[in-house]
Every structure is written in C-alpha cells, then in structure tokens.
Image 1 (cartoon, one colour):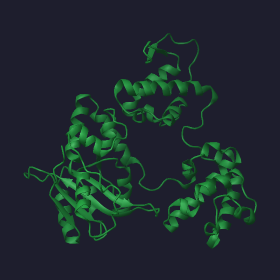
Image 2: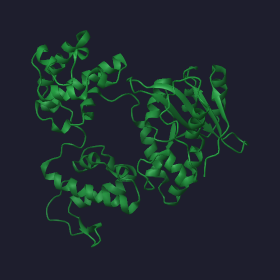
Image 3: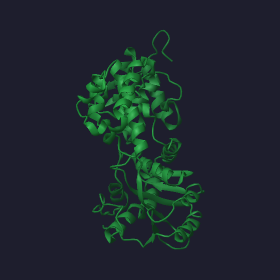
Image 4: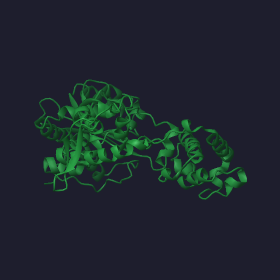
Length: 400
C-alpha cells in the first residue's frame, strides 16, 4: 500500500523556526532526519532538517522541513536538549551533522535501525522496515537528489517528508514487538550508546585503519601508514576536502610499502601527481614519513580486534562461530551481539569490554567465558547447528 502524503510545512525563516522550536520542545517524542552532502568536502554540508511530531489532540502527524540554507539552526539545540525522545533511523551521521550545525545532541534517542536489529533485521533500510511493519511503500525516486538546489521540487519535498512521517509509527510497532520479547530495554540501551560516542571525527592516528589493504602492511610500514594517513586527515579537515582529494589511498599505501627517502623519490610514487605536492605538501608528507619510521611498535595503533595472542586464536574462531549460531537462534543481527573486536577484547580480559556490560554480559559474555574456561564445549546437532553444552571443568586454573 502506498504511503499517504502528510501535510508538510517548509520552514525558511527565523521566526518560523522559533515557532516550530516552541512547539517541539513540549513534544514527548519527535522524529528527525537530515539531508546533506559531503561527497567533495570533509565537513557535511547540511541542506535540510526534517522533523515530525504528534501535536496534542491533532489526531495525526505533522511534518516540517527546515531549510538549513536559509536559517540559523542554533535554536534546534533547545529541542535536542529538551526532555523529548528523538526517533531516528541509522542516526550516527545525523548526530554528527546536528553537532556540527548547532553543537547539541539529543538527551534521549530511539534508533529504529538499531532496534530492528534485535528482531533479526541487520542494517535494514527505512523503506524495508516501513513496508515490513506498517505495510506501506515509500518512494525512493529522490534518494540521490541534489538537496542544495533551491527551490525544492514537489517530489523532493514529498521524499524528504516521507523519511520522518512514519518514523513514530514505526518506532511504536518495533517497540511493541521488542516489548513482547523482553528486548525493548536492550534496544534503548543500544541507542543510548550511540549518544555516548564522541560526535567529533575520530583520532587522525586511526585513519589508516580505513585503507582497504591495511592488513598487508607489516613492521615499519605500519608506522609510516599511520603518520601519513594522519597528516592527510588533518590536512583534509583544514582544507575541508575529502581525504582522497588531498592524497589518494593508493599513494598512501605505496608510500607506506616503500617509504621514499627524498622529494624526488616521492614524486615517483604511484598515484601521486604534482597537485598533491603543491603548497609545501610534499615536504609535509616527507616529514610524516620520517615520523612514521621513528615510531616504536608500541606507538602504532593497530585496528581493534586485530591483534590476538596465538593461544587465543582457536578460542576466537570458536567464539565467532557460536555468535553466528546465537544470532540465528535468537533472531538478533550478529553485529549487535558481538563483533570480532568485541570477542577479542573479552577473551583477552581487557577492562571495559562490551561483552561484560549490559544485556550482552548474560547473553554473550557469560557463555563465552564458560567456553574458554573449559566449562562448556561446542558440538553439532546433526543438522549443522552448533550447540553449547556443559562439560566438567578442567583441572588447573583457567585464564580468568
């Protein structure tokens, strides 16, 4: 069934925005989404903020589209910092954009994509969830639209409004299903964790983790990759360019694999041309290379979950297989249960490991601890499914 088009107000003036903020600060819940571009810039260029809420006694949902190119968005901080719960879908980027726009984060969040993961939907799109839970079909014609163009077309307005018009109903439907299964608190806790993450960009020293072939780097090459990628990240922020425009990934990897000893050698690196070395950038890259050469192994930041002690490798393999089975048994998306990095941190006994906290501690952490201690074992049930079975504790001390 096609979704019914809601009434939509376009907010393009400061006075209109103030009236909207005054109404929304009293709403117990509001849906929010953003439209932005960052294909050519480091920092997102916000074009539109969409909100939906249920006014008291109105009997339906109202939608407003705030034109971020026409108004100062600072007043939105009053809504975000107010008592209402922000309902969003795949909120991570929206949170980053809102922080950049008005230096505020919501006090409470319910992420429908995260919540649906506890019902077996892994990274599901808003469109697929609205169809599955509400039986409605959303248009996707303007998904890749140029949101910086003005005036907005009728189809752009309809598409942007549809991103929030059904979010409150969707949250209600998912929440009711989760409540029946005793998992609503888990979803709320997971959404709250999104708010606990820093809204600012990650540490530049971790930028080399994003390189596709970073696992091929060994020894000194890792230190060079870390420092050159960090230089690129800082330069991209300064110039407001995407990092690959400052220095292509291919060039970063080539420099790391065979660090040049001179500017002349740097100019011969694959993937580089003169524009990447202009304005003193060549000398700055060479300085980054030398810093990378000088790094001690302990100063190189390895990707989380990558380094596993040799004696723990079989346990990580077994644990990963069991988590995949648990995902199928419980109908919960596997990445929500535990990533490989989560498993490594837990089995390594690191403080603050996620598998020792909240709902994961009982569902995932405790069984894995029994497995590693030898108090449980894994077996096949004859149908290809893994079963965790109790077994007598081994003689001697465990690792815990």
